[in-house]
Length: 413
Image (cartoon, rainbow, N blue to C red; front, top):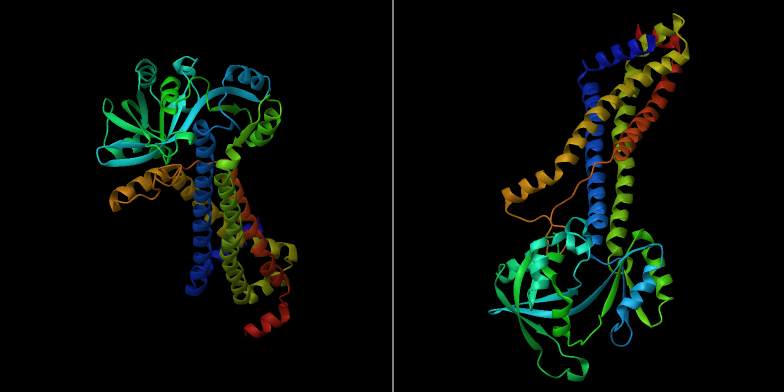
């Protein structure tokens, strides 16, 4: 208790001294800004990781198989073999091809995917079906030669639901030198995922896709959704070895794994910056306490002559330094939590005010900066800040115990 009272008094006296007050305020402000920025940055990385796992990986197949030669004519039998693996949650056929969309004089390259009619009820759909309305899905399978476009692609082409467009599809290898086939399709719906997929993908029924690809029966690929997305490569290899036909194996870690690795790399850099920023802020605590010890040598000497133990003197300066750390951590955590919660809205306002796009959805897999606050990040940042604040007090506190009462009192007169 005595140490706390002395620490409060020393800190109050330092506020009356201009230079000491400035250094003390700088240390507190540095901790506030450091905590706030780091909590916000970590929340942004959490948001990107959640968008990757919860959004992108609902549209991008976890695992996909394509035959080395030809198509999967009896894909149901292959699907039955795949479904026996306990880690496989869902098996869906697909016919995928690259095509060119023409609307007037506008041309856009697209990835055209023929998808099977969902067998689940509308409230239990998963994957890409989550992003297509039930009405659009019904029209897609009820209307011949129909297509569902990404909203970004539709805006690029200037088309709406009910409009017609021309789909140019390349011929097979044996007809490689012939002009591409032209097919007239009707837009029956739009999907909005957000990001580059909205500008690249188009979906149609398997029957329409077979007509476009000149496949009499079967499918070009089989896609899997697995229980543990981070185990997709092992599942892909294990299941692929059990198939009776030769297949090309692909999984999301090969096609989009760089996104996850980039997120983890940035997170590691943020942790490093956390330590450096806090170290700089806590250096000011060291400076404040060293100057306080130098200035208060006579008072420390008087306390020692009155019988105050060295342990109490150490606690006094530890408490004084920790007060800066506690104040900085408290306000920094509050500011960081507020910024993390409101970051998407703040970015949307900035985009509106300056008429710019921070994340171009033609390039990135999300169109808005996401944010997801996690308590473990708040605890980590505040814990590191308090620990470094504590460490910063040890040297000045030890130095205070080295004050010689006789010499200090003699030099003060």
